[in-house]
Length: 332
Image 1 (cartoon, one colour):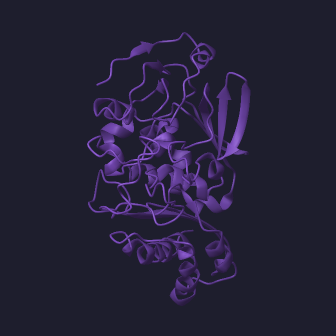
Image 2 (cartoon, rainbow, N blue to C red; image 1 turned 90 degrees about the horizontal axis):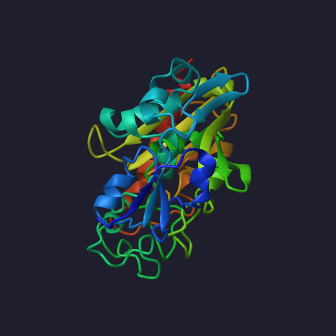
Image 3 (cartoon, rainbow, N blue to C red; image 1 turned 135 degrees about the horizontal axis):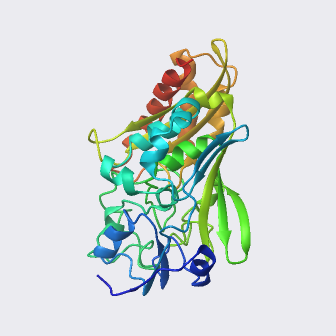
């Protein structure tokens, strides 16, 4: 492990004054909160900051549900949010996504902000024995493109990176039109979660829109009665403590047996949580008839590019959409 200095600032402004940078391997100063992902990356020499700034006790951990919707403090844990009765009742897709993630021990420690910022599970990124990883070492290449890429993305990729985004929670939040409240040394701003993560393009090592000295303060989800009819479907290699091969978060507004509006986001297949607006548009005024659902879901593959081992994901994500819509549509 690379030696570092641990700073324990007295308050959030003092923490921001160090100008830490989240989500970049070339940052000399980084944050640590729950640490469930960070500690692994430090131990494996993937992240090598000279200084870590602790956010312990400095961030909001409240879970608030009101007429305007849901607000999750960045320090609220996965376990607390997943078990919150108002979240379970009004936003089941969030509770389901969290309960499908990690292990109970990790969920007790991991935070909302950290979950959204967690790093890819690409084995070439996670193993410093592989030199070619543009996300870890910009300009070194991408070993996954011509290597074992079963776990990798088919949407939003570039010639520099095909790593899939790992968060289940972020997929559910994107389907709910969530936003991120950002606190920085220069003030506050709010960014739609769909715009928070960047596509890799030629700079895969820059993963989010966060600037130095900025931190996620909270996540907000607008009130939406349709969110009660939502579902998170996760397809994975084993029943627990496994990341998604393909996942689908679905939020439906129904008019009797007809879909009035659909919001759908995919995980495991994109370099960021992936919204599918063409599928959503095709589902408007559709029924839950499997033929109609399959026809709409086929549009999710627009622009998809398999790299050999992950070609199967293109068909699997279509099927995941159909199944998730059927489950959500059956709810009352």
